[in-house]
Image 1 (cartoon, protein in one colour):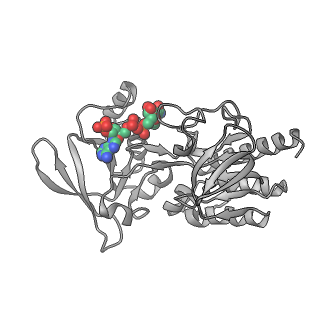
Image 2 (cartoon, protein in one colour; image 1 turned 120 degrees about the vertical axis):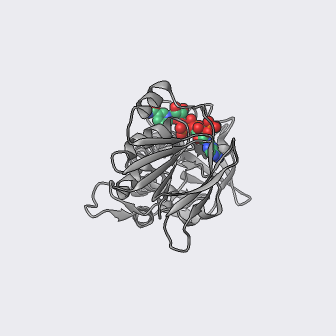
Image 3 (spheres, protein in one colour; image 1 turned 45 degrees about the vertical axis):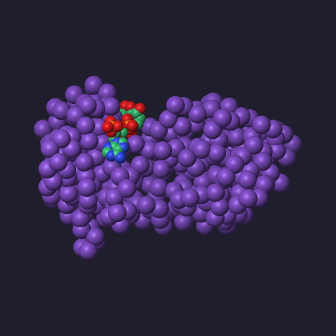
Length: 307
Ligand code: NAP
């Protein structure tokens, strides 16, 4: 029987593990399908407080993990397959085995949606990014492309226009999901160009090891052409990792956990932390903060229950 099981090993889960570890609760962390979370897909992180020279994303998240292990956290390279949250202790199926826990912290994150192009994954952190706030700074004076037609794409394009020599939004239709106000603001930005009814067919240049350009296709005419670009930002949405909790935890229509105040979910003893609930800030530092909140709530809950 565990006191705390933490689902996810990004900033939120690992920080929750430090706090619950230091509270002598011997947490079990399920590392999940993307161990280290989204930071494991980035390069230099310059906005996490405490690192004046910046720190590599994978190093940062590994450091937080080691800090948690130092305080007694146990890590398992496993995924949550199924759970029963209908009564306490909660039951979780991992690698075919059922385990029990008094509290659960869901820090399973939200995975960025990718286009699925063969070269895309090879160039992540080398010009391909899913986070303008994280990586925009590296593209000062460079040519930037943003993919998507929602509010995220508009927000990212406007943000990136502070850095890039030009920003081109590539969208597969000529209708937008973005709200009118965001769209109007983006249309009024003289640094932003538009390529509508256009899809990305390929990204170059894996040989060189960084992004130099893309192959584009006009979906109406079928015309193909290559275009030079240095920074390639995906803003085509995120998918919260909440599948095992569907039908038990309150989720919004897009699958994000609905908060019931603080780090609480609709189920007493189950807490949320990080991007699995947060569709607004999505930063390493806010995820860490949320992990801390969830851990403190779990600790207080266990204390009140006499554990
Ligand atoms: P979204 O609204 O779902 O938009 C995703 C965009 O990506 C759509 O334009 C979609 O095209 C495109 N897309 C999806 N898959 C694609 C693919 N495989 N290839 C090419 N394009 C693809 O996602 P979001 O922009 O991340 O926004 C999510 C939610 O957060 C929304 O409710 C949004 O309002 C909110 N949000 C709000 C703000 C703000 O108010 N400041 C900022 C960011 C996000 P189609 O339209 O053709 O499907």
